[in-house]
Image (cartoon, rainbow, N blue to C red; front, side, top):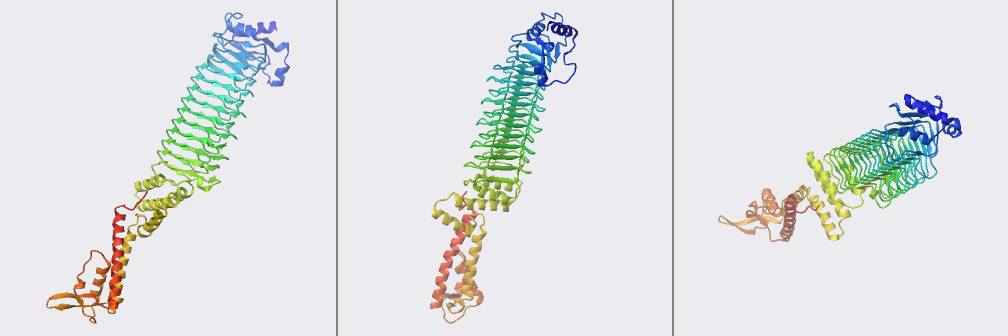
Length: 590
C-alpha cells in the first residue's frame, strides 16, 4: 500500500494519470473484488491535496483510476489548488467535501456508498467544476445520496449517465445551489429517491445556463421525482429524449412551483406520472420563451388538483400542447386558471385530454392568450360530458380554429354552468373580423343557453320564447317587421276580398262636398278604396284617406270587419312596439 501511495505522489508531481486498471474496462463486481494491490487509503489523498506529501504538485492535479479508496475521504473545510480527479474508483465510505474550496472535483465512473451518511457530502462546497459522469452512488441517508446544498460552482455540474439511489431521501439534494454554468442530468441519468422532498431536489437553486434532463429517469414512490420549487434558471430546461418522471403525492411528480425560467421549458415527448397527485405542478411558473408539452408528452395524474397545473403562470411566448395526452382519473387533466400566454395557445394536432370527478377536463378559466388560439383536440373526455370545459374569462384576440358552430356547441354542451363571457368573447372576435351575421348568431345562442341553464322563472322563460318568435331575442328585428306587414296584409285581404267585399264596406254618403261617416249600404267601394281601408285598419299611425270615400257598413258583415280591424290594430301596435324595442336593444338580455 505504501508503494502505491508513493507511486501516486510521483504521478501527481509529474501531472500524470495513475491508472491501476491499465486502461481495462471496470465494472462494479470487479471493483468489489480488488485487494491490497489496488487499495489506497483516503488519508493519503487528503494529505496530497493539502500539500503535505507532494510539495510541488503539477497543475493537472491528482488523477487516479481503478483504485479502491479505503476509509472516508475527508476534505471538509479543505482549501486547495490541487484538482481531484478519480476515475473508476471505489469509495466504500464516501467523500466529505462540505465547506471545502476545490478547483475541480471529478468522480467519473466511480462507485460511492455509505451505510448511513451521504456518500458524497459537498454542501457549501465551492468549486469551478463538479463532474459525476457515469458514477453510481448508493445511499440510505435522509439528507441525500449526493448532497450539494448551498454549493457554489463557477462552471458546470455534470451528472451525465450517473445513477443515484437513496430509498430514504433525495438522490440528489442541491437545495439553494448556485451555479454559473449548466447542470447536466442527462444521457440516461437515473435518480431513485424516497420521502416527500424529492428524488432530485433543486428547490431555490440558481442556475446560470441550462438544466438538461434529456433522457433522464427519475423515480420516487413517496414524493416528487423532481422538486424544483422556486428554481431560477437563466436559460432553458430540457426534459426531452424520453425523459420520465414518476412521483407520488400532492406536491406533484415534477414540481416547478414559482420557478423562473429565462428560456424555454421543453418537455417534448416526456412522461410524467403520479398515481396520487399532479403529474406537473407548476403554479406561478414564469417562462420567458415557449413551453413545449408536445409530440408524445404524457401527463398522468390523479386528484382534484389536476394532472397538469399551470394556474397564474406567465408564458411570454407560446404554450404548445400539440400531440400531448393528459389524463386524470379523479379530477382535471389541465388546470390553468389565470394563466397568461403572450402568443399562441395550441391544443390540437392530436391533443387528447381525459378528466373525471367533479372538476372539468380542461379548466381555462380567466386564461389570456395574446395570439392565435388553436383548439382542435382529437379527444376531450369526461364521465360527465357537460364537464369537459371551463371557459369563463378565457380571452384570445383572433378567431378560434374551430368553426363558430362547433365552438358554440362546446360552450353550450361541454361547460357545467352558463356564463356570458365565453359568448361575448366569441362575438367580439367575430365583430373584429367583420362577421356581423355570425355575431348575431352567437348572441342568439347565448340568450337561448341563458334561458335553458340560468333562468328559473317560468314567466321569464315564457317571455324569452315570445321574444325569440317575434324578435329573435332582439337580434332579428325583421321578425317584428314581418309580423307588422303580415297584420297589414291580413287587413287588406279582409277589406278587399273578405267581409269588405261582401257588404262590410260601402261608399260613404255625400252631402254637397262633405262626406259623412255613414256608408251607403249596397253601394260597393272601388277596390283601391278597399285596399286603402285595409291599410288604415292594419297599420298604426297610417291614414290613407280612403275612409272618406269608403267605410264600414252598419251590418253584421261590417261589424265583423270592424272587430277584426280593431284586433289587427292591437296586433300591429304590438309588432311596431316590439320592432322599436328590438331596434333599440331594449329586450336584449345577456
